[in-house]
Image (tube, rainbow, N blue to C red; front, top):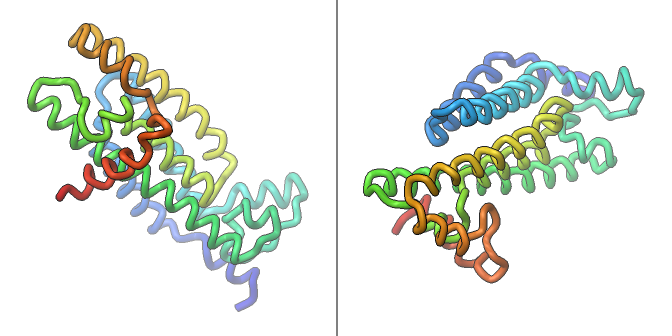
Length: 224
């Protein structure tokens, strides 16, 4: 099979597209569980991102055709062309593998934050308290950080015109949602939450607490 045939054989698998969209969507709505319209708006952006990603990854390579046909960019057409950063820079299969590995690290870390944060929120709601333990002792919004990292990882792994355009919108939507949620938490918990907000960073842990953050991430998903 020559390279062009390998490129063509990689696409047109719409059954896989549907399966992957359903699985990823289930994870999204299982661990994010949107309620208000702002949450649904953020989830809707991620849903659009997921559909665009897998439709191009295994269905129809719209971005590649636009780059080669409309913009006249010369890309080698083979099964790994969709790893566009490597293809555009001319790093070939080795670059594609590195791109996949780096993107995968961000995606896995994001999913761990999403799941670990969900567990702590569930415990806090059951006990009627502020979620301020585990990951939440180090950052105020680990789940939203997880969403941003997972989306960024897919941008590294398999970028498309639509997903790259959606990425900043997703980040902005969840930053705004974080501020909205914090106003509600202040109304509900008052001064205790105000003190928590002063002590704990919003999305990224303090420099000296990264080791503790990594341990908390592991423990939140794989408790002893």
